[in-house]
Length: 204
Image (cartoon, rainbow, N blue to C red):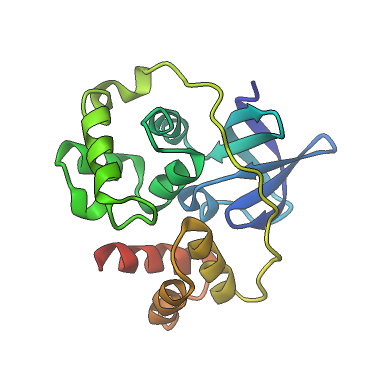
């Protein structure tokens, strides 16, 4: 089990980053909440990680905060929620916001996350309601089943990179383009564009 990585950030193409650890490059999938907190290329970075192993792939998922890692491992225990959907949930909602959605049975917010329909949102509320108070102490899950993926080429501008990040999260091209364009006058960095566009999409 690889539980933590510390090294040099050498590539970031949402939602995938590559971290060089003593000459070995580790490809890690991260939620957008972690992606837009990443340092510049060439800078040191530390991620808490979950290693998923299957016959055709060994995949790493990474998080800035340990509580996000624990939330991810809890989410993928829910029936019908795989690693990609768990990443989508943690991209659109911080851990505390996710807890509030579950405790308040906020179906409307949950179903705004791409891939989360009403039945999935109801299942999340039912299965996680009793686990949230003790989330930090819940045993860590091992052995999720991710799907292998080849990263897309790096976008040329912050706006294109923000759109690419939203597409990776599951939004449709028209939705991503419209959301980024709506906030582009006030924000010019990729992280700020992604954050503002996500807030706009979740309010709709």
